[in-house]
Image 1 (cartoon, rainbow, N blue to C red):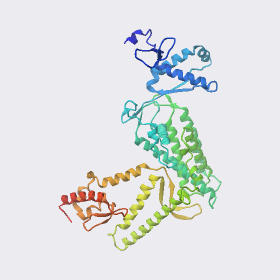
Image 2: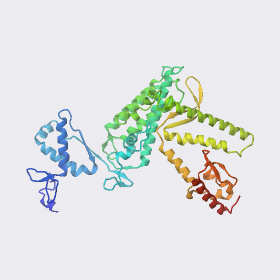
Image 3: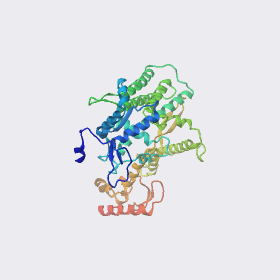
Image 4: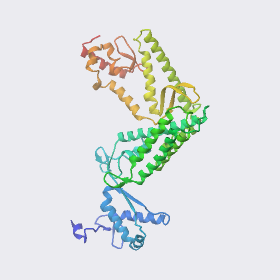
Length: 476
């Protein structure tokens, strides 16, 4: 090309590009009208910012994509050090460089292709953060941070972004947040219970404290860097994250058995402090770092028009569900003892209780735990609840389950078709639990929540019913 023939040396590059005919964007200069070359723009910006912050601050790190390493960054260094040639010579004697450290990251891929604005396959920060719910524990930004830290691989290599990978990061962060919240609750109950824990440590207590100290040291070494598989010296984000998770698992096991009030609180306090510190170092927000602290700090604050706030409302809902569930279980056992296995109403009631526990409340950021819970003072109560990160997946799974029941591709299996009558068809298989009441022909009249079936839904159901009736020859 013409530009290549005009080069005096293969290493030459453009500092100032002359204005072409018809170009409206240009500046005047000693070399005529034109504009800066691509490489000099960055050096000029760095020079301007450096002067603004001198002499208290200096640039220590310059970052960019791996494709900018050459020629862009190479030429940046060449022109900047040439510009500072006098001072650079004196700095070189002191071991100083223009910018001492350069970081190059791998490309980000989505749907099998490099993410780029031109391909319109990018995810904006606004889109990423728009998935946030109103829960104080939800943080798409921290989910993304965790993905970058320990799931996406080395920053030097390519990374593939997908909602599944972010969901994986969300689940891992939920485990960490769950421990921070449960740990604070455990310490609170141990410190204020009737039976104060002993101050004497055993081997297990010492081992947990040692594990916290080891975690801090391992995380520090992971940030300093280690020799990677290719022989390079690299920051090890995966080890950093896994080290935190290992300590979280040990802390969770510690507070799980025995109950609060039986062990010294100092070891778990050390673990909580260590986990929070390591998360803070790599940039996690207070939503994650202070999980558990904020909840208890605001636990007695009334919100909205509900007396006692949301916790009082959740307590009442949890207690009501527990009472309904226990009554249904008792009634079902009695019917079985009496030999009555035809009434499915109590089973449907239990299914609704399970639905609230497994789908409705988790999607709002609340988990209900069934079973007896023993407190530090020896008292026992049925069931308890706790906050959690809202789970979007459970609500979508429930929608998929409902959709599947009326999808043409989800008809009953051939084995079921052979044994089910038309009257039984809409109360078994994929439809089991979907409806509460039926007419004499087996057509549903009420949905599982007790509401009268809508005309639109009944129309869909009748199509399924008629199709099945033709298939089995109207078998009653």
